[in-house]
Image (tube, rainbow, N blue to C red; front, side, top):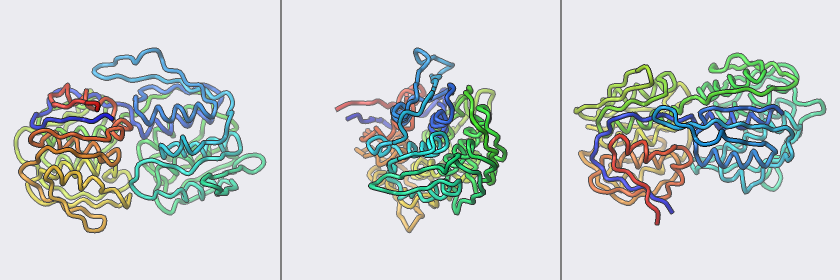
Length: 430
């Protein structure tokens, strides 16, 4: 099994290309089920989750092709992938596929909208909370679907004539449920209004792609989205937006180590709240013609309190990384997690490196320490794993991170990107 080995102490200097967003690519890929034409997606990252979803979509009848080799663009790589689903050959998403990645559950919306039925296993994914599917079920019921749960599967059937537009207000903000209802509503009869909708950039990216395919959508990026159903969708060509979580992660890595790095191909508008927190911690962040420049030359890391919240708040997917940064701050900081109830599993692993962190309910108190020391640590989920890398970049001696398959789910070529900027990071196999 692979491990990441880090020798701490080096500043980061250079250019890091930001990949296409995993959290945008996955729903965009699933949207290919809505049309019998070809959906072409540019800037698709090469990640374990993307490859897993390719297998799942193939099971439903999607033909997938990649443009030859991975084509070099600037300092990074991107892939252009073509998705064509002439016919949905299977409306069942089996447990052995869905259990490996929660987002694969989202196929239920397009399958129901286009084929009129879906049998989808209850989902898996990172163990960061219960994340029930109630919101998905109630949203689809609002569109007229009949839903039963049997033997770990959700059996969904659309009414005769297809799904019917409706107004539905989510009791709490859910990015995944917004994705699913948005996709399902594009082919529903009549008008659908989604209230308390997620406002994340990835929702806007999906809406823009669906509009390019012929959907009639307004309000994406606000808390109310309106969809006028259409009879069918066509193919389109769409570029996946930059990964804001990768952007924030590398910005925090520079703030941790010191140095001067340009994050290429990204935008501040995708994560303004997180960037402001990093600035308050002591880093300078400016926009450039190609992306963002992050600099910390000397000076201490200042303690900053943050509370995770749906967009435009501080992203829960950057909480672990920011905790890693705060372990070296000059005082006491607090991080409150409001999205997931079990997302502090990285605390004990950071403690192995010498961090001083205490928990009280959903709030972590971090007392900054003057130094961290390398040690063997274990990744518990995707974002927690990269927080250990950030800490390892400044820890004295050697840090080894095991179970790095979590990293491979969401960070494209992490070791290569960090090494090019001067970090001593390598992947080793047992």
